[in-house]
Image (cartoon, rainbow, N blue to C red; front, side, top):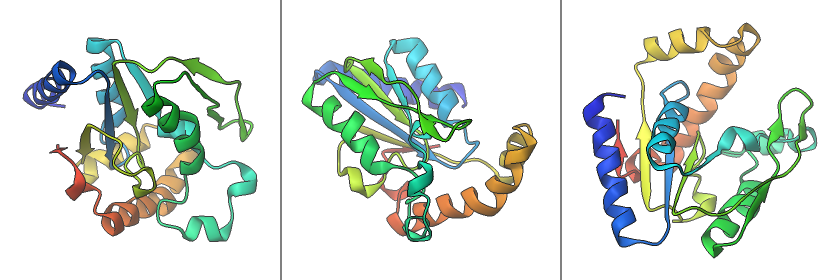
Length: 187
């Protein structure tokens, strides 16, 4: 992300932190657009919690034709809401179980206290199922050729899934729910 855009993000967060006891930021957008990188840059500056939507992939028994037919249905948004968002908003300890891509099971629980600043990053972080729970909503885009090059740097066995499954599903999610238009900042 360009330095001026990063400074815009920091400035918005600083203003929110000055006015609120707790701030929750969502970073949604295209795959390979830099969502995880931006979350890491924010965490480095503010020492905050970062929750990854990739930790909420569907378990095997949830992977049904009906579920995949739902817009944004390829993540376990119900579990994310229950394990992260509700405790976070209530100011309670958060205990969530990240999805393990190697075993297709849930890992040991991770416990963390809600921070003054909490970041939720990943595609589907702005799913309408969650309601209006974020204080700042950021959407990241990327030139399709840059996205392709970045994806091709990832493990080869994932390439086909990105291009044939995941990109079309996230595009449908962005369009049907107007995700980009609902955001405060778009880069």
